[in-house]
Length: 497
Image (cartoon, rainbow, N blue to C red; front, side, top):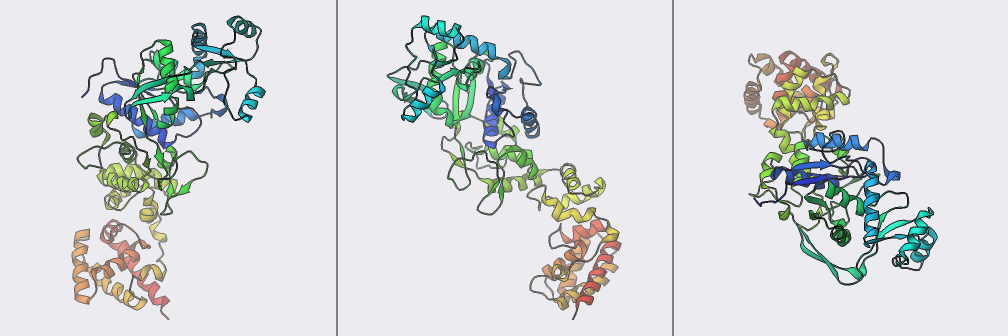
């Protein structure tokens, strides 16, 4: 494990603009993993300086997402800490002081260009032309004192190259001639990201910064700002972005859901993962494995196992297609790992949301038979919801549900009629005893196990897909199973031409 001279302090600094995008959550997760590996702290900071885009309730959504994922926060809003406040709109005076300090030191300047002037520059096909960069200081002070609207811009070097080191990409270099004099403080007194994050990261003693590679073009500005302030700079890691499942284009925020090549809705916002029935353990496993490799050809791993191995420098710099099909597989693996009582606990709210009155003891009995069949917690509704309906109101399914593949009504009816005396004879009604009895019945009647088991499953559950046949009938009990098979026999007899 590499040694670090200073305490490790990482952060996630989202804008409160609504539900969290999965790309941002991955950046947060990598920052958290790094901090936990090195015994450091993970800080949440809210960057709400763009007041027009702020959405009420966003901070609560962010905190709820972390709680769901099991990502604990050491400092932040609602928690506190020694370096707050942790909301940028509560730190405006600090940004204004440091912006003015940069002006006084000759590293920045006031720009009085009007919106009309800026529009003319854009219309002419060029960026800001630095017309106020060398404006005499006495004139600048006088106009500012008179209340003339202005922004504060940074004086980027006009020649040479800015060089820096990225933990993932190594040394990076940028031609200064290609860069603009960026705005640091807006005319309303609010900072831009460029100024605010550096002041905050310095005063909050952040040691490592994880952010998307989209910020790499701004890296030279930030390097120059750290140099201008004379502060020790944190280490930066620019993470690869997530691409659409087809590998084309960034997986961005969107208003409308979209489907992948299988026609499956692709979740992108954190609340969609919860709504889709994914387990938080699977989502963390999934995100950790995009761009970073656990090693040992192991794809299913708990976060506790990943922490001692996690290394930002081992992150692959290449952008990755969003492997949503892998998440479905991982989720099924994690469902299988859950103890039955834990699975039942997580399934209960799903069934209740679908309108079922859930008997918890019955659900604990059903849960073990579901473990190898659920890809999503939501699958429980279609697969096992029938257990929680009023059994006395059960009606046999339509003939097309009862009749198995490559069979007809007559052969299905014959199977179910022959199954009745077998059912009645069973004193041990365990799934194992049923399996033995009906395997013997299939062999003696010249039928395949699949035809017999499938016909019984449809008769007992009323649907084509359910938990295993004999698990289902064991849970229903002998009397109820017999009643349902008799109802199916009657239904097929009545359906006969």
